[in-house]
Length: 78
Image (cartoon, rainbow, N blue to C red):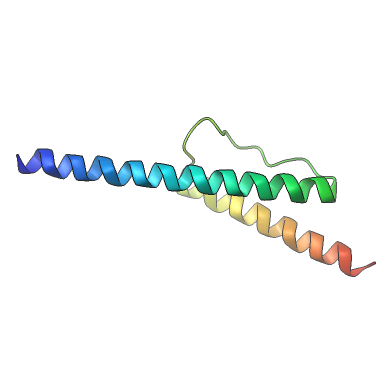
């Protein structure tokens, strides 16, 4: 019985992580789309049908941060 309880707890934790990662992915995609349109750059390539790994989310976060920096730098020249 304890094993079943532990497994159920792990499944719930994994469902929560999945939901959080999908939400962050959606937010990053929206930011990427907006910034790429402003900067006339191609969108970040990521599989939106699966749950991203932590590494994939970190890479996507870095990409969006780089786009933000590029936007700030390009607007400071005008």
